[in-house]
Length: 65
Image (tube, rainbow, N blue to C red; front, side, top):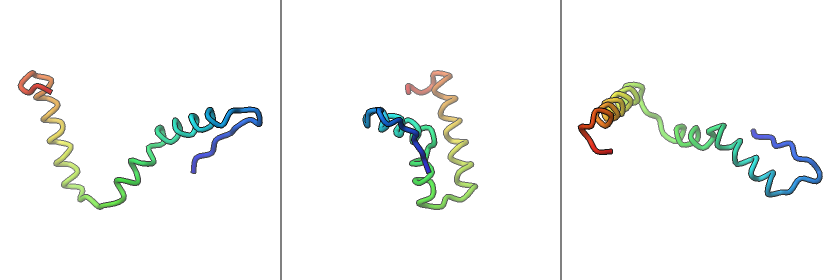
């Protein structure tokens, strides 16, 4: 749960902005999306390897990214 300490004279827009920043830093939305479906550890590992290979190819100039 995110808690925002707001002062009595603080504008609601500033409090909302603080909440949004905390929400992004906490990565709550990312966690919710990950929990919606189960992915096997082997599939996660394979995706990580494929991403690493792609990044390496982009860095070496083989792929325009």
